[in-house]
Image (cartoon, rainbow, N blue to C red; front, side):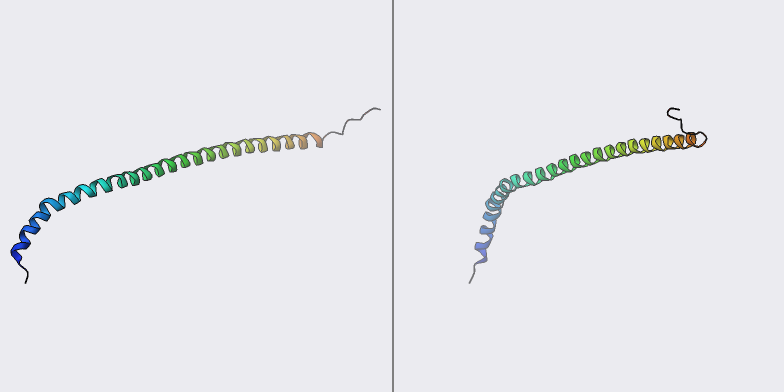
Length: 97
């Protein structure tokens, strides 16, 4: 039915011409796709790095703001204590008379 003697030259032609042609075609098809995927991954990594930098900057600003608020609270408490200590032992000044 099928002549196996014909199969050997057909396979040889396929492997000599077909495989390299498919490899070149696949290379030219996949090359731009792989480049796009790598570019997207690289761009995403840069965007994430920029986002992390922004977040760290905001956290630093929040910490500085909290430090300023704590300093104000300490100063206000110190002033309140000074007022309480100074007001106990003396009568309020009279306003005319």
